[in-house]
Amino acid sequence: MATASSKRTRVRRVPARGVYERDSIEAILDATLVSHIGFVADGQPYVIPTLHARIDDTLYVHGSAASRMLRVLEKGADVCVTATLVDGLVLARSAFHHSINYRSVVVLGEARLVAPEAERLRALELFTEKLVPGRWAEVRSPSKQELKGSKVLALSLDEASAKVRSGPPVDDEPDYDLPVWAGVVPLATEVGAPEPDPRLDPATPVPEHVASWRP
Amino acid sequence: MATASSKRTRVRRVPARGVYERDSIEAILDATLVSHIGFVADGQPYVIPTLHARIDDTLYVHGSAASRMLRVLEKGADVCVTATLVDGLVLARSAFHHSINYRSVVVLGEARLVAPEAERLRALELFTEKLVPGRWAEVRSPSKQELKGSKVLALSLDEASAKVRSGPPVDDEPDYDLPVWAGVVPLATEVGAPEPDPRLDPATPVPEHVASWRP
Image (cartoon, rainbow over all chains, first blue to last red):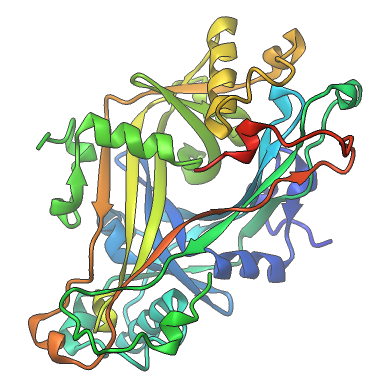
């Protein structure tokens, strides 16, 4: 089993749930649609939901979701990006041992505002393809002006860790005799039927990359 | 429309998405299973997924998820709790206007470690009932020792705001003529069939409060 890349990312609560393998960390980041980015402004922590996308050991975060952060960032700000998937309700025989099954990743580091236009274009492609694979080739590409207005943050995955809980509840030994149903209620993402834009020509078929989309 | 309770909670990016009505804020918090709590330790922001539950204008957060925070908290720490629901993929005709439909709440304030045993017990009941309504009456109540070991944080909802995006994509006017499918892919939580604990007596029926659980 791999070890924590830093003292700061070592999982302290329930250490057995800590996962430090790069593959596991990447898989969780790739499977999560929305992450939460934390930063400090005027001493106050802020946590903002944002889209992210990963390539190799770089995590890109959509800067527009956290514009308050940009003035902080120019000074080189420490951030924390956390991505969490909820896999189920864990129903124990005692109230105390109720929990959830989840997979989460915490990435710490200094975010960098992506300056090169080519890298920003690449990040926009990654965001679009992360949302719906196959979409980038179908839609209008960013104009010069849109690219200029796009804020993208980059963060290295050097300091990252994952935490995973899976499986049935863990009850105190005497409680296993209680006549209480215990187990897991699995949760996943349900994908509804695509809803065409009201301004779309009704003759436009739902393309394969949309119809077959799964999380 | 209500206004922001403070300058810090005013929605700055896309102000039209800001929602400050208490009812809307409470509804989003109540509908969200997991939130993300942000705090600062040694100058570094941390964002940790956690369970939360609300009663009136108090938000309770499960302290065990953020034990690193406890030593910070004893000095009276500022936190940010953010709860986000993802409602859909917003697929525009241009890459730039892709988005997601979501509802999120940001709560700022000084978290208080809940000391009175009665309030901690009440919070554990809220957490359990939030996970699965009707569960608290079915399971073993917390022992004196469990209650002693439970860390619960409380946060006032005085400084809170919501941000909501809903509806179809908004494209640049000329792009509406492009032959590109556009619309929304709705996302929701899918509930799987309950999985009994392997150590459960197979004769134990799935109780109604579990079988009928919906997010």
